[in-house]
Amino acid sequence: MNKKLYLILSEILGISAEDITEETSVDNTPSWDSFNGLMIVAELEKSYGVTFTIDEVVSVKKVADIKAALDKYAVEYEC
Image (cartoon, rainbow, N blue to C red; front, top):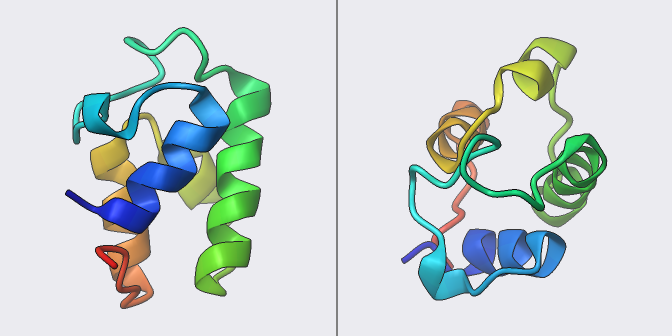
């Protein structure tokens, strides 16, 4: 499990970290609305010290997309 990343998502989305998978997405998580999507971006930028491009922000639709975006910045998100 990607503890830090999943804890961030859990807190913002109001779901258990254990229920989060790479397929957790906008389409299957009712609390992942546009507002919480922005909250996720803001918290990830703050927590990992990165700044996402607008293309990265709009392309994120599921947890696997978040990991791919963080990988571009060589972020260690499994802590």
